[in-house]
Amino acid sequence: MRYLIPYFKKYKLESILAPLFKMLEATFDLLVPLVVARMINEGIPSGSTMSLVWDFALLLAMALLGMGCSFTAQYFAAKAAIGTAAGLRHQLLDHIQGLDFSTVDKIGGSTLITRMTSDINQVQNGLNMFLRLFLRSPFIVFGSMIMAFTINTEIALIFVAAIAVLFAIVFGTMAITSPMYKRVQRNLDDVTEVTLENLNGVRVIRAFGREESQREKFHKINAMLLKAQLKVSRIAALMNPLTYVIVNGAIILILWFGSNKVNGGTLLSGDIVALINYINQILVELVKLADLVVVIGKAIASMGRVGQILDTKSAMLLDGTSVGCDTAEAVKFDAAGIRYSGGGEEALLDITFTVLKGQTVGVIGGTGSGKSSLINLIPRFYDATSGSVQVLGEDVKNWDIAALRRKVAVVAQKAQLFTGTIRSNLLWGDENATDRQLWDALETAQAADFVREKPNGLDEPVVQGGRNLSGGQRQRLTIARALVSKAEVLILDDSSSALDYATDAALRHAIKKLPGDMTVFIVSQRTSSIQHADIILVLDDGRLAGVGRHEELLEHCQVYREIYESQYKKEASA
Image (cartoon, rainbow, N blue to C red; front, side):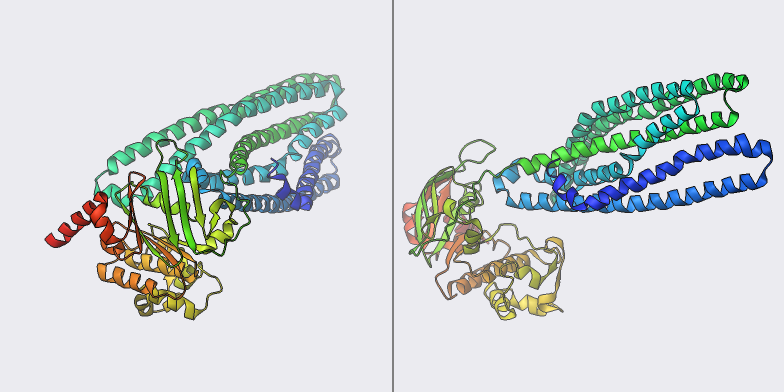
């Protein structure tokens, strides 16, 4: 709850006014049975029409005032709940953005989505209901008991016994169901994960005809969620019937003892009606309290899950302050290796090489050889678990992380664009870039021609993920976005796989002609894309199988020669 309270404190006035207006509404509700009792005890026997009219007008006025108080309370409660949830959601997103890749991988994207959406919505609903009912319901319950004592002390003892039993039922149910709601939310994580997997991989699923097996997988996990929900719902559902049994039993006792007192002349019939009204008010409020307990139980469970994420610390220490050194070395690996948190063998082992400023580096190897792992160590997406990685003469662990990411631009394997326009996506590289700089980057990335053909040019809309563009267009725009940043180290992680050979060659030639001493890493499956690089790193099963130029590797590196010859034969046969 310590994460919720700072945002809740910002709505002190609303959090005070909401329950106060609810209590004011409750006060009117408590006065209603007394007015009705007076109408029965005095107005009807006396035959005074005017007295009955005045009492009716009083009831109508209290109803209208109560309705106004209710609307006002709901407004303030909603404002406080929504504002608090919004602040918590912002904090959660900021915290997730600060987590390192390995921690995010360990938690899982589906879990983060569920906690960002469903869990915080549960917290919001719980807070809203809490502000509206946490004072009103007890106020009505104990207020009705006190009013019963003003009417008849002996019968009021029935209220005391009924309230004690009812509270035991309500809070006992809450104690049982609260941990069960946590299990429900965990099952919801699994459903979200499978749903995302199916949506993201829909083309692959259809291509391999796996629709039926994926449906079965979803039904199995969804059935587990259903089972967990039904289990907790059955227990929660017992609250209302048990409450009705206790309250109706109390009504029977009130009528029994009350009728004897009416016959004995110590109690009036209007007082019996007032007592029945009070016990019914208790029933209504305890039903509301039961619903509140369910909602609060879900909210507490969800807040605990949100708190788990906020308590999770990044595995990386991001306390570096360095911004690099004046050195001729751009990137240096010294016996660097990495083992991912999931366990297993090291993805990279004993990688050593040095790259000077302005050099172009090719990285090649078979699938799973560690190419992406290697380049992920340069911008410090992951930390080396052995050895060290230096950028511009400084160990990446000593860098100010924001400064490091400004020095290193990465174009990932999967081209990712965001909803907006071509311009807004390019400005991710440098939000202050001019149109001239944007067009220069597009020219270098071989994207200027197709952007000019768009009706709106730089302001052409881009849908989520860039799905209104072809794969090659998306790749070229992501390359242009990286070029806009004018980083000193540019990493192209197999980012030209959707380009034809001519466009790929033109892209590499244009990057080579850029002014300055930008260092370029080109990760590729094609030897043709890297054979003109100053240095080629050949990876094999996480180890460095060869380092050198194209001709040297053909002569001395068997792994590289096999890759080259296999591609050469394919191209020749084609």
